[in-house]
Image 1 (tube, rainbow, N blue to C red):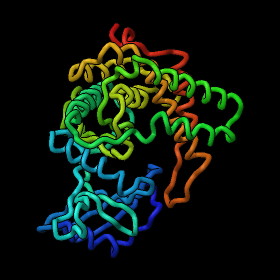
Image 2: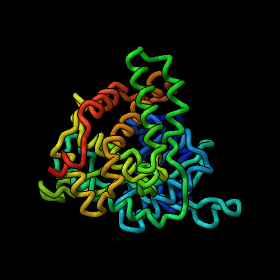
Image 3: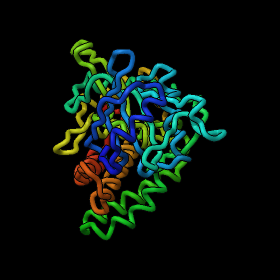
Image 4: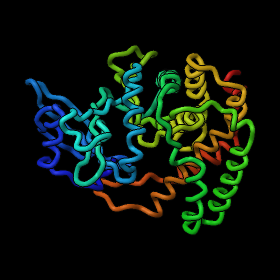
Length: 340
């Protein structure tokens, strides 16, 4: 959500008009992330203002993007509150087979989705975690009949490729931990238990700032979740990995990296109320929590030491997920602890 590719309003306005979204009134760059260029857009149509998010993709290709955009469309049509990509009409499709949800702007692949209501909750209570856990399980179940397939592009193969790239930038202790954890995760991935994990489309990046709540519309003990967004790390992977990534953010004490047990219990209980974990998932929860910590420590190391130039770019501090990984090693979270 940094701005790598500036977009003048005069360039974006024709696209909004052609999609029938109205006259573009404002376009504002969004701070926060490090992968794509994002803007909030306001249009006027039929005497009313409408809010959108315009994304230009800086790393994902025209060939990769239909998986993400059609997944969002698929989930939206099944009642999961996610941004819905806006399709081009037949008359805008210049060649047979051109994807109706994918556009081009300033030479980059682009998409426009509706902007979700509400705001992110950066200091969640157990009730927020329960809402996230239940919706995550519903999302997994809703994606079972999604017809497209694409691997998690930041999964184990990417970890194996990227660790050698960042190692020269690390102190000896950090490098030893990174290499040891990568070896452990390769060992886990070769096991029969890992092969038995249920799989399907996953979000793979469901952090606090990728979920919206409208707390004014819900009771204090039942906040109203209004949407999941930023699906551009999604892929087909183990559902347990998705749950672990989510726990590592929503149920973690940010200063220390330690898990907050009440929040973790609320999230997992709500998830299991929608989809009970299998025995293989229950057994591998500690390993997947470590995997989730490794994945984000590694990507933040990469972005920190090998940054790209961008307006508004603010790389995340990688030491947070180093702390999370060390905590998951020192104090593994088991299902028995969650259910005691």
